[in-house]
Length: 197
Image (tube, rainbow, N blue to C red; front, side):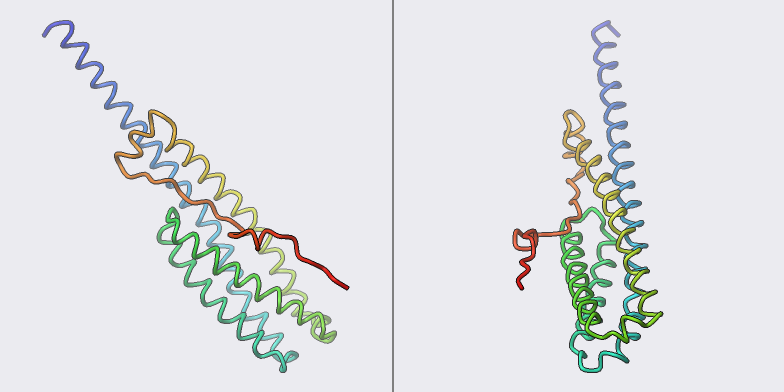
């Protein structure tokens, strides 16, 4: 073989090795996204498990607020379904969008439940209700940290998948950009609440 033949073989071998390394890096980053979502999933399960207990304690005091309690239970069911779908595809934009919408609805209904509970001094004073409220607040904080870690992993993956020359491997092998988890999805949700007296 001539010198130019060896050079061509060397360049081809280097290109193949680089492509393998780029592919492995993208797979590793995609797996880190799945791991980060697993941490979110743990906190979502904890949150979803707390909701029925919270509703059950409140049910005895809030007999006239059945619609609020039912809204919380319905939102919980939808959030559990969305979490199950997202668990199977943590890099799917549709699954993450549905999860964000469902969790937003659950958060809103829980907020309404807590606002209604403020009007019932006996319920506010109930030790179990206080404990569940504190656990829910703690879970929400953990969920916030887990979402931040997930978004950090998504950023790393998206950066790696969109940088040249790894972009070539990402496009050829179907590594699509992963979606970030967003707390709000519209300008209306981002607007500050209006307080009027």
